[in-house]
Length: 229
Ligand code: DHB
Ligand code: MG
Image (cartoon, rainbow, N blue to C red; front, side):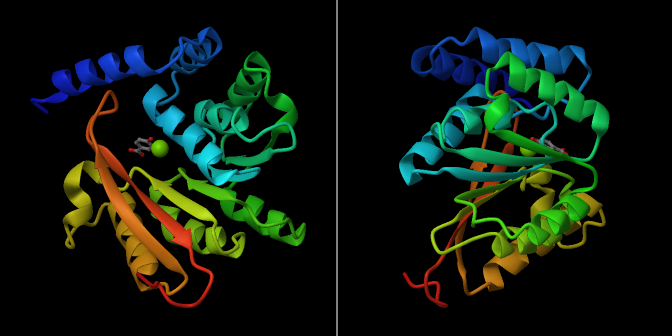
């Protein structure tokens, strides 16, 4: 995309102006890149957004579907206070191992509960444990399963829970009703579910930056059965 350089340059400027340098977090990104994980970590500015969201809503309990190398997990874990906990789910045992090392590196291992295996199974298991509702649910795994993850997110929510769905733009293809790309189909179906769900009030924000062109959905579970205004 022609504008990618300026998006990166502006992200660099904002990062340098607004974020504290953090060698541990930099080391986590380097570890993930050198382990050849896909470059799907959130950017540092997006990580700070997740941290600020935690602070703004007083989040203590986070559910993350899709750990990868655990970079976003660490931003959450650092922002939920000493009593907080984050349950994060990762399909791939090798990636989970990388994430665990990163949690130690970032000194957050104690408050992270990583569940390894297909998220559908980890979510069913979690449900059997009857956990207290989560304050924030971050859906960031295989995009074709977004509808299923969205249903689970509601299951684990209370009024006021914030549900985020990452990477919903799909290079713009999310607006293409004829797309057969499973990630697009899954994302579109999840967005339809959200739009039709009386318990959710939602928006979608398109983003540009060091991660290119993307965006996320943010939904808040409502206390009554109407979206209200
Ligand atoms: C994709 C997935 C991610 O979680 C992300 O942050 C960026 C891209 C993807 O599957 O394309
Ligand atoms: Mg993502």
